[in-house]
Length: 57
Image 1: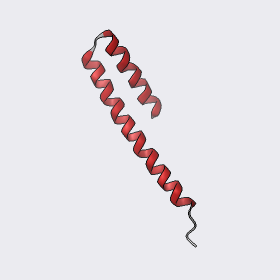
Image 2: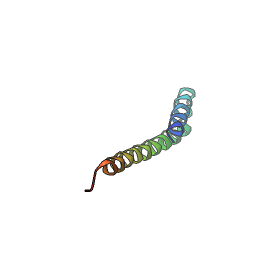
Image 3: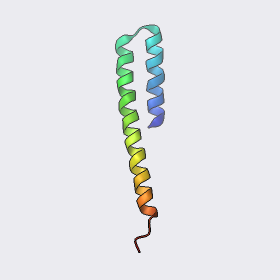
Image 4: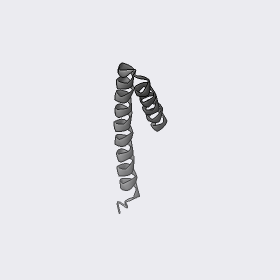
């Protein structure tokens, strides 16, 4: 999923260099969505691993 975000980020940069404003804006929107999704999944996995490491006894 992180590779998708990087791919769309590079696409947005290339599109912005060539002046395709609409395409660049669309790619940036996708990058933002994927980044937030990746960040949420990371935080959830850190919390789950933290809880799993605790002893309940």
